[in-house]
Image (cartoon, rainbow, N blue to C red):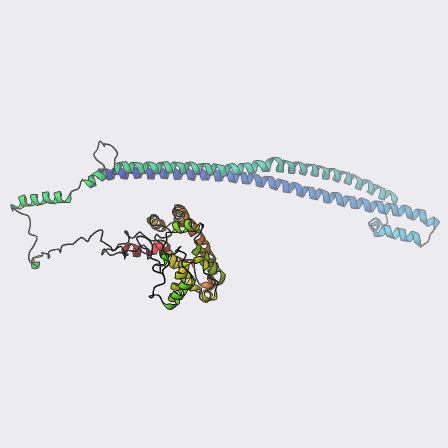
Length: 507
């Protein structure tokens, strides 16, 4: 109990520190928000002052324009009177009337009945007002320009700098508290670890783990029975057997522990996905590697195909992936390239592609001729164009018959643990790490296959193959445990582990 109290005390201290950090962050946020609002209010005041100055400038300009128009009307009227006096004695004809009428049309009606002295006085008044309005307009222009220059050259950069300082302050505060949280969390974990399993001696006693390991149920039961015999004055403990009417239970049957490593015949031992545990599957043409004639047990169609395609001694099925690629000097297995090229050429929009199986006889025939001479097989031939499922079935069969799955036995448990991660981002990162750990041949082949499946997904509206459907098809094919791990509770091969992990294989 004392150790549990120590752990609880560590956790309470950790919680108090977290509460303190929360309060500090809240105070920092309030202070930054206060500064941000003050900066915003200052910017608003400057913008309002600039706007008011521009409005005053517009009003001064309007007054100046009105005074200018009034002066023009007076000058036009004055010019009209002088022309009337000069032309009345000379002409008296209709041309003088037209000139006076033109001046009246431009504003002389306002001064109708005015004598020259009145017009001159009015002109003097308008000129004085125009001078005053002109000075006011000039002053407003200078003030607005000065205020605009001050705002854009000095005040606005300072305001933006203040806002950036607010953002930087909250950013630095958050980083500091995150670093502090990491330190506190690491400290509490170390304290708990030293309490559970101390590295050295502890004055108050051993850690929680040594205490748990020191518990001996058999010895405790023996001591209890001895104390019971002394307390009841009986030489032995209580009866264990008796009639069920008195509350005794029947004896528990003995449990026979099965053999942990059952013997599995080598010829029948296969991995969870049809992978053979040792070597590769024998060539379908029997002694084809030695150039022998096809056996009579093959169907006539396959036997005829075997005669048409001589064996080149370079089998494809059941051969380790690295051995195939080194032997053929390629970056991607030839069968993968040929099958994917054919599928993309004429069958990528076929409904249920990869999900539906091809004709068994056609699939076996195509497997045999690909195993004998893969370069001589033309998958664009009409025989294979009729049903693309034959090609997809052969490709899946080649993946299943690899001695080791494409994602390897060694990384199987890592993939399963990554698939069990609930956080999607962390799950993607862990799966990415596992893929990077693949050998180069497996990585190159997987990359090519994923590119092909991506093209299949682009036509999912027509072929009906969603990401889930493809994962169900290829999950157990690409990923599986080693044959020694695929043993069920009855000691039979190929059992429990694969079935238990089927959901995670397809995820």
